[in-house]
Length: 420
Image (cartoon, rainbow, N blue to C red; front, side, top):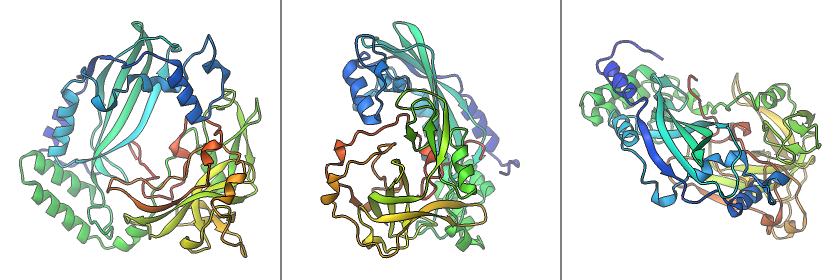
């Protein structure tokens, strides 16, 4: 990123920094006390069967910390105007797009049914201007202190990126804008210049890029962190590694820091043989994104080991993908840096099971998530969705779902964190 002197840039950064330490929520009160029905719904959805969450001495799962602070559609009356002012300032400077990037939680004491929740939130930090794969913008971190009966029970840090998108051409033919021109455009808007001039500046940067074809083909990068780095190291060696709890032996995917069945943090890995079937799938038609040529099939693949993974189904036309279709793992290289596991239809396989007939099998799996279409901020996706009948009967295993273990095979999968 270029941080040369641009008129208005330093002024905007100083104004943003002025919001650090200001309250975002004051005197927030949980709409409901910690309660057993909500705990039960959470555990059922997450497939968490830990006995600590049931019975007369039950505690709430620690990862439910934020759930007790949710305001619902009506919101919370304790919310201050500072946070909204901060977002409006960024909107006015041209940073109109937003994406949540990550959250951090610290648990200081367990929550139990009957606990009354109160909380306060503060704008903890606003970063310097950063350039990411999504675009150029600012990371905003809020910290919420959550109390039970007046005693601090935990903290929840939530971080978003307010940014100018790197791709401004709706057809996706232009590559990433030059970060310095992006910042100049935003700074000029902050000084009162018409936003249309900033758009023209951005468009000029796009249209002048010589290697736009190469930029279009470039896939988003996967998010790699300390919890899933081992998975991606395995991919580099053409091995699909599955976590296994060394305490109870439960397999889990995607990779997680602890076992959802027994809570143990100890684990090792087993290597998948690569055989599987299509458990569920979507066919993406719209909207288009750079580097992705619809229609294409995204499958929820049930591996022979019993866990499921989201990836592309290749080697067969998208309209011939069916539930039950046998597939085999292979690794596909997209550029000099990125290689991903995909699943190729087995030669000679038919169209797979009829969706209704597939209900007879009782899938075994971790993650328990339905096949998800890639997420976009560009409006509702138009897709075909195929899921097995009566799939709701399965009891998913695993908790603390982490999207970071997913593949960079969707237009939004490779979210860039601060400093990328």
